[in-house]
Each structure stands twice: as C-alpha cells, then as structure tokens.
Length: 209
Image (cartoon, rainbow, N blue to C red; front, side, top):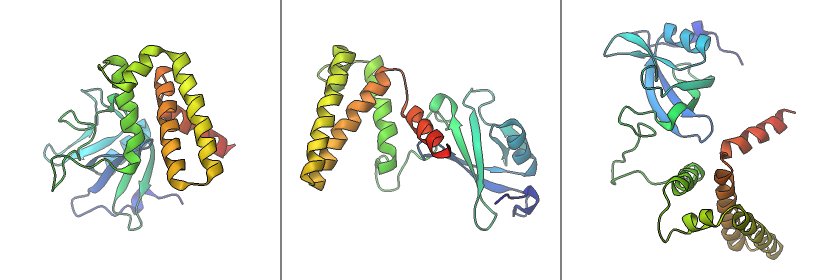
C-alpha cells in the first residue's frame, strides 16, 4: 500500500518522529524528527534527512562526519504518525557519542543485554576485531592465524556433527552443534573479507526470483 506524503499525520509543529532501523541487523540506530521537506529530501536523495528542533532546520545525517544513512525503504505505522527509515548505516556509527546506536544504556544495569537479533552482528564485529587485533589465548585469533585450510576444516567437522545431531533429533544437541557451525561459518565469512549481509542479500535475491 502506497502512502501519500500528504496523508502523514504530522503533529501541531509539522513534525513526525522517525526511527532509523538497520535494514540488515534490525538494530534501532536512533530516533529523530522530520518535517515534510525533510521527508521529501530523503526520498529525492536516498539518504536520511531530519529536522533539528534545536536548530530549527533540516539536516542530512552524516553530512560532515561521513556517517551517512542510506535509506532503503520508508515505512509508516498504522496511525500514520510514526515513520521508520530502513537504513544502511555508513561507518557503523549512528550516535554523536561515537556509539553504534543511541540506545546504548539501560535503566537497571550498566549496559543493555545482548538480544537474540544482535548476536550475529556482535559476533561479526568480534571476529573482525580478532583479525585486526589478535588476542593471546583467544580461540578465534588462533583459528585465524592457522589460516583458511584450518577454518574450512572446522566448518566441515561442525557440519558433520550438526548432521548427526539432526539424526539424533535432540533439540539441545542440535542447537549446540549448529551454534558451533554458524560461528565457524562466520569466521570463514570474515576471513574472506565478506559480511553476513552478503548472504542475506543473496537470500533476498532468490526470494524475489
């Protein structure tokens, strides 16, 4: 269903809240506001534009920092009064504090818990860091140092163990072995200078075709 910009329920100041959500990880990167002109600029350029309530002006996210947000799709809620920019975040930083997102604090603890949808991106970042900054006594660093042949050997071993787990039909065993397999696949992906996004995009391509 196409939404006409004229049907958006702006507030009395002509603004609407906009959630910037990572189109690949599902992560909520930030929340800001937009007016009609900011939305039009976003549509025209393909990059996130917002309206600054403090400066009373439109701003393009990342224009000076390079932390641009490519907008892949704009979604609207059932009441037409909230938008989501489905984005691809440049430089992997969305918050002015230098954090990945603006929601890096939790009310009842020092930092937010790791949620299920966050674990794959977290592991990708961890593996990437181990490639750039090896850590002594780290299994990941050791595996990467041993090279591609060792990595693919481990993928093969874990795949066989996963097949056995499926044959045994033990849910706990299946989850355990698949976790090992997925982890080693991620190591292979990062070693190959790729991202899990590449696999997600291929799956989408197949779904469309």
